[in-house]
Image (cartoon, rainbow, N blue to C red):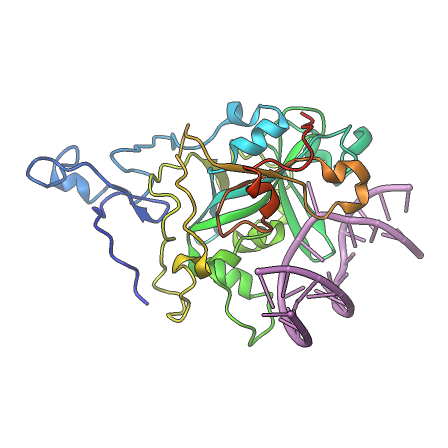
Length: 312
DNA sequence: GTAGGGATGGTCT
DNA sequence: GACCATCCCTACA
C-alpha cells in the first residue's frame, strides 16, 4: 500500500509527517531565500520553521534534571530519536513510562541505595541512559532523573518514522512464518522498543542530552494522534494503522509545552515487591493504542490509579 | 481480547 | 541457585 497522501505541503517534514505550513495569500510557500533554498532544506532538521543549528528540538540537561515522577510524566509525548549505523533515523513518541524512585523504592534496581556494576547509570547525572538485560535475552531502557538512584523506564513508543526498519529489527527475533506485526505492536513494551530502535547494551551510561546516536526531542507534530505514517516499504497487507484495530484515535498531543491526557496506574511486572508494586508510578497516554497494558479501571476513574498516595 | 505457559540467560545473593 | 521492570505463541471465549 502506498503512503496516503495528505493535504499538507511536503517541503518540511517532521518525524516523517508533513507539517502544515502556513501558506501565503497566493497559496504558495516562500522558503526563506527563494525557491533555490527550498532544495537544500533538510526534510527534518532544516525546516525553515524548526531551523536547527545544533537541533533546537533536542532536549538538554535541564529537561532531565527534575524529580523522577515529574520526568516520567514530562517524557510522555516526547520523541525518542535513534540514528542507525547506516544513517537512518528512527523515531518514536513516548507514550508510556514508569518511575523508579531509587533508594526507598523496593521495586527499583537501586532499592536501599544498592549500587552495583549493572545499575551504576541510575546514580549518574540526570539524562544518563540505563540499559540492562532482563530474562537473559531482552533489554530495557531507562533514563536517570533527579534523585539518588532514580530513573524512568521507557515502556512504550508510538512509531513515527522508520517503520520498515523497525519491522525488520523486530522480525529478526521472531519465528519464521509467524504473523506480521502490526504497527502498534512494534514498540508496545520496554524490550520491544529496544529491539525496534536498535538500542544496544552499549548505550548504558551514555548521556541522552549529548549523544550523536540517540536523543530526545520535543514533538513538533501538531497532528500527533492522527493516523501513523505509512511506510511504502511495508507489507501492503498490513492495514493495522487503519484506526489501530478498532481503537479510537488517540487524543491529540500538544507537542512541546502542551498537555497530554495522562493515565496513572500501577507498574507492571513487579508483583513480588509488596506495597511498592501498587504505587501509582506508571504513566501513559490515554487511548493510545501503542501502550503495552491499559488499566481500564484507572481510565474509568479519570486517569487515577486505585492507590491515592503518590510517592515523589 | 485475554489468559496461561514456556523460553531464556544475566545478575545477585 | 533463584530471581527476573519480558516476549511469544497457543488456546479459548
